[in-house]
Image 1 (cartoon, chains in turn purple, green):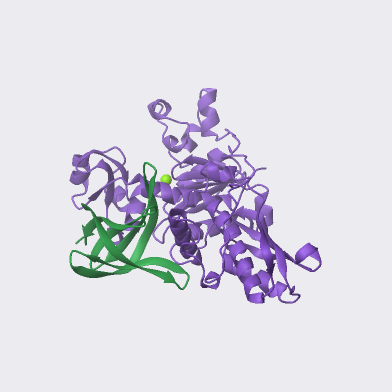
Image 2: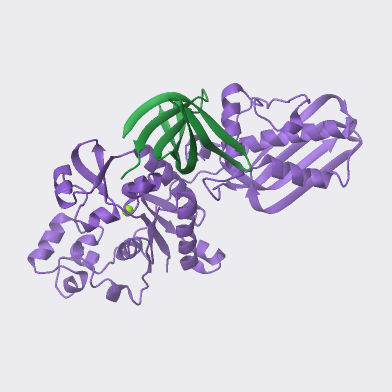
Length: 398
Length: 82
Ligand SMILES: [Mg+2]
């Protein structure tokens, strides 16, 4: 038996505009393609109550709901939020299918076992994170079931902000009142056919002898695997090494060198939108007579150079070396990083610093500890194992 | 909705773990940002912009950071909905 989650953002475009413009919250909003003409391509929860649906003309929308605010679609906003949504969902399963800009399936059959509270708790946490990371006004309905078709139907059953779990024992009963046209696959012509028989709900349809392809759908028998986005292996580790021209003997100088290398390794991680749990530091004097090797693993992944540096340096200070010719540092145990909050995070600062460095060259913005020290530039080797990053799965900003 | 696209000076807070526009000067007035409701990216050819939708002085504005030139522009402005 499989367990599949279907995550569906509610009235996505209109809700996103309400997230951006707080004064639109709680008010009827229609999204249009361009100012002043055409059709409503999405309606807010409030506008739907007035009968404003996708596809109605602007004229009709104003007649149904004179107080409606019409907002031109801004796809950049919605795509940015979708990228964040995909990352959230990917934290709960390696098998995620992006079904549309505001809908995805996650196969959690195996991953739910590693999660206290199982799929239900996963869904609650996802919903909570959507509010944290996409915005407090954003809502999603989640359906849990043993097939994609039923999971999608489950998410439809309670909107907005719903969470519905349909089991093999109760799904037929609980979907009996669902309108036939709500089933993915029962299109216009099949709905019309069923309506012609006097059938409007799945329960009624199940009492009839129907052509097999329609019967499959009303009994919700269709079973399809969740299609994965990609199967590329992300980078396993990043590292930076440096050999100095002359031995560095002052602890202050060693500290600057280490900080510098950590900054670079962490910048690589952020460039790839990854973070790691294991970090190491290796320092050796001339001819490796004296050396220090530090390695540690932390519970939560990080790509923050200050965190990495502080942890490594604390370990190093327990057994310092007198001089350094060779220095190396690296981070492994990598995973894709989703930041915990969009609006207040040290990561924002780091990303802004990366933006500045990307423009004016490395180390235009660097920590004060590096001031006065000689700065080491990364070798021009590019980033290894960064296919993920090149394929653009990490295009999330802030 | 008014599309403005004027270069402006923005005060940004880089501290306490946050980078956020906190205020800006525009057409002879200083505005302070009361909250940022959405952060997202726009792309224009190869140019990438980071956009902050911000509430300031009863307006809703889009403050746009050009990721290359690092210049700020005020992108759109909307008076409060009443
Ligand atoms: Mg939806």
